[in-house]
Image 1 (cartoon, rainbow, N blue to C red):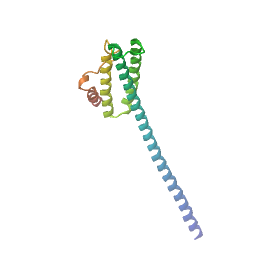
Image 2 (image 1 turned 120 degrees about the horizontal axis):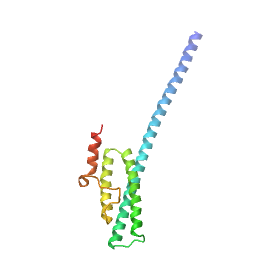
Image 3 (image 1 turned 45 degrees about the horizontal axis):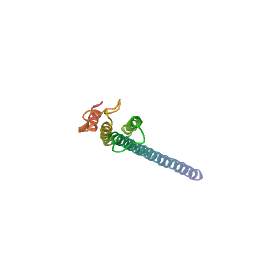
Image 4 (image 1 turned 45 degrees about the vertical axis):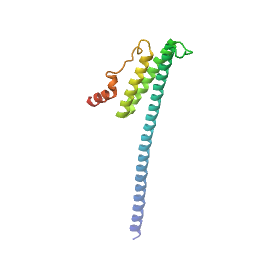
Length: 157
């Protein structure tokens, strides 16, 4: 009897240790999965905020250039300086747009395409010769380039 009682006790201790280990492992796995999900949400939020900031900067510069060119309000900077800053803002906007395409869902990317098209129209209106070199309005811009992108993305293998 003493040996049987000892085996039952040892078995119970081993079983308790295994269930504790399994419970801890599953809890840790769930916690890491939640952390990863939260981290991606933070990255998306940062990308969205950065993109909107770049859009605003591009539009503000376009308005400043337009007002300077038409004489509505004189800027402290020269036209060439504003145009150079607009080109840099366009490049930065493009970089943040690529992050949106990588991290955002379909609706977000379509909206970003539409917002980008509106911004490019404002930039083109502000400049005497249209858009800076290397920038162009998407085909079918008035009817929504986001929908065209969505169609092409779905059709890709």
